[in-house]
Image 1 (tube, rainbow, N blue to C red):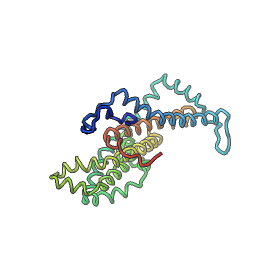
Image 2 (cartoon, one colour):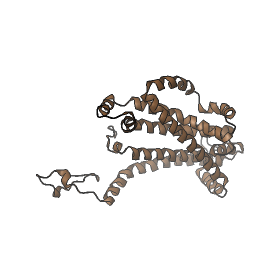
Image 3 (tube, helix red, strand yellow):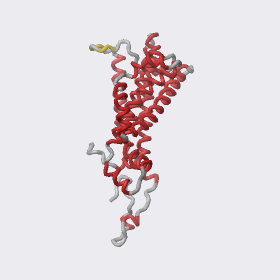
Image 4 (cartoon, helix red, strand yellow):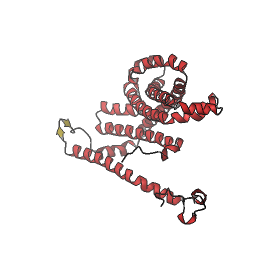
Amino acid sequence: MPQGGQGIVSPAATSPDQPAWASATPVPLGRRLGAQLRGQLGPWLLAIVSIGSMLLFWHLATTYRWDFYIRFDNIPTPAEVFEKVLEVNRSDKFITNVGISVRRILIGFFIAAGLGVALGVAMGRYRLVKHLSFPALEVLRPIPAIAWVPMSIMLWPDNEVSIVFITFLGAFFPILLNTMHGVEAIDPVLLRAARSLGAREPALLWHVILPGALPHIFTGLAVGMGVAWVSLIAAEMISGQFGIGYFTWEAYSLITYAEIALGMITIGVLGLLCSGTIRLVARLAMPWLNHASNGGRT
């Protein structure tokens, strides 16, 4: 009996002399959407419980001023932060800072994604490129992006470009290494089979190597996005004049605790939206993974 919206065969329509696929009938769209919603209901409920538990702990700790080595005396309550949200939305300052940070992260991340994927494929595919590039990159990779702030100020005449450069560095190396390892992990049998069917190098790259490395590439993109946010916020706190990192640091300088919490929450929400977008694009780009095994998870 078909289950969970996956059944596309009507038992009444089949016969011993007729193959099952020949009598398959499409499942109505409403039924499929209903099945998907039912499948997502459990995870959504657990997510609400998870975030609700965190908010409850925050409310209790700040309302009753818990002090057990960790002090909550100066931490604003959730209600105070919510009042601050209403207050900052009356002016353009907060939205402007958020927009500037989003613009910086998108520019730095997309440049890092383009260069990281292209160079990672080349390094994973061609030994000469790897032997020429990998040693120099391995020297640069352990340097934290934030340590590049003084150098980037000297390299670039514009402070805006310096911050985008720091963001780019944070995302570049995770994307590069994951792409390179994804290309190197492709089964050589697939490459030999494609060659035996007459595939030349461009077709091999486009139809075999790139699709095979996509799971690693998207892993690198997700990790790179997280590191890019860390690098951006640190750069804005040190040398920025605008952005959500500067907003948070300025709030600390002016001792406005609710704005500090608001800046931190905004950074978390923006990072969550970016990571969610990457996961959504990954599902659209790799639909075959939706039907893969869940690895025995319970």
